[in-house]
Length: 245
Image (tube, one colour):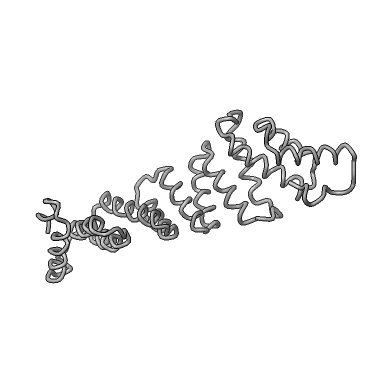
């Protein structure tokens, strides 16, 4: 099998490996045997899910930590490609806990996979790790804001406010570099001030800041105009529902 694989004959190599696994005592198989079968499955079939079981077998029989991390990395990326984000998250978590010194990317990919799997509460916890470990970077606060905005879709609890506020603090004066993110934060905070806290002047400040970055933003123009008119008139009536941020 190994010789046929080296010669590029993946079909014959797979046939030989099937015979090998039929007769060999499983206790005598090594991780490289399963890895070879996984690579042959990749070469012979379009369905990448076929190779997953072989990489899992390789992982189970491998003791070298670097090799194990390599297998988990493949499993995570393949599950992502197949759209199985919950399974991707499982392997991303394994990578994080297995690495002696996890990197910011390990945390980031783990959190994003949970978010994409709609596990927002768990994703928020993982990005909380990111925020704690890398407080000068925006990504932890950004994804915590996104998670909490979904979990608190009516804004009643204001769960995302703290994270959008912290996000703006970390971004500081470098607004144009993070323009899209800043616009989203201003829009969210402006809507929260108007709809939940009923602080229309504070809401107007956010929409005016938004318009300084994006003067052609039609929604911000609309809401700023309505808020300014309402403030100028000193009305005790809230803006009409279709005019609210």
